[in-house]
Length: 356
Image (tube, rainbow, N blue to C red):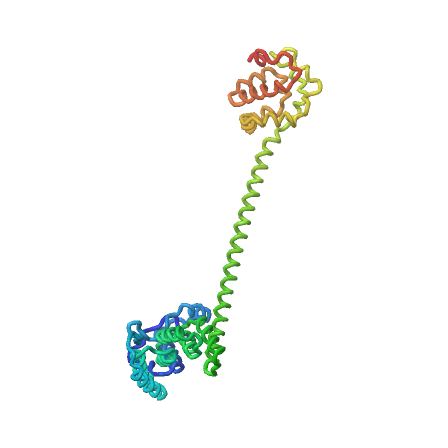
């Protein structure tokens, strides 16, 4: 039988009849009823994994109500009366009349301070009636008086098993078997041990799946960051290459025609060997100026600089370039930068360049 994801309420009349059965018969009948209810509702059965996980948080399977829990001792010291009730309860329990036995045990508990054994015996009857929470409570009280009560441990273990508290059940049943081995508890202990293995295996599986999910997520983030970094580096390289590829600028090394530039007395004769350090150092110095660097990206400026010999040897062309609103300012700043680098420019550039 595979339990369903939800259950219908069992009618009170049916529940009362079920409660008169022992725990094993109750389990069989309850399972059969659950199966019928599932077929009536047409609901999809739970998967095995759902059953294992839900068992950890399953609601108590007993029909008890906290307001109807059996009474606990408050006061009184009639030991003779309590003994009479205990004997009557024991006889009724032996005859299988658990409900009547519970009534007598209740009277015994309230007549005088109950012993650990009396509480365990009442807990046993409550367990057989399916009142698992009440049975656990009686066994808790019994174990407060006698922590080594194998009977109280065994009954509490069986009750916790019925409540789906498999870890607590395993602890109690293991402890009871260590104190006083009982053949009737062997199957119960095996059942809860196997259940805990299933639950723990499912938890490990879920944990590994979550770790794998987080690992994949971290790898995806790392990959995205690496791609973003590569794109940024490529963009930076492209930006730098746009400054370093000014065509034919190397022809300005000796600037042989700059001597004809009007307004520059003595010409540029002091540059017999060209510019020391070559164009590499010159361009690095020029492009360190943001305005010049920006101007060098203007196609019109680049076109004007593509043939410097033609401009330098033609005063009219130079004048035209210098008066151009886009090219002129860049040329003026360029010449201002070049001037100090040309050691042989005696007298500088007084009066401008050819009528400037």
